[in-house]
Image (spheres, chains in turn blue, cyan):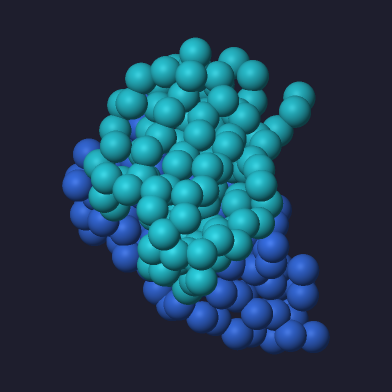
Length: 113
Length: 115
């Protein structure tokens, strides 16, 4: 089955800096890669996703890149703000409607002002 | 639209007791998933319902866990008897199999503590 590795497990940056979180996956048939943000005590929320027919997707300060050949994808957050502090999870699935997502272990991002 | 609702939000039980968690998905979402997060670790897949049928239960840790989805609406996850290692946050999520709309909506989770 699918296995998703995520690095780093913790990341501390200064406000205004960029943050990058990387994930690798094992199932070459995976073609859907979402990122979730979980603030303390709250539910995970989808922040951005990418499908295998696209190499990069951007939404304001966040972007995701995908390298299908190498089976890795990354989340980039620019101009970080204290409210970006949270746990970020990457995930992968085969993308058929309803296929279960397999998550990485999460990255705790701390943005200090 | 109403979101995914889970209750209780917290549960503290003694080892050996039984606990039942409930999840009400978004109306019309045929897909319902259960996940668990143990402190500091990944959001681990437990099982997936499509309507009332179990599509994939490969993540269920053992036969102390029983999930049901009566009539394809709400779902329950029962742990009997509970063990210390069952502690964690249990998340439910639902999604609508509508073309490329794969996005999950998560519930707020049930924090289970077994003492």
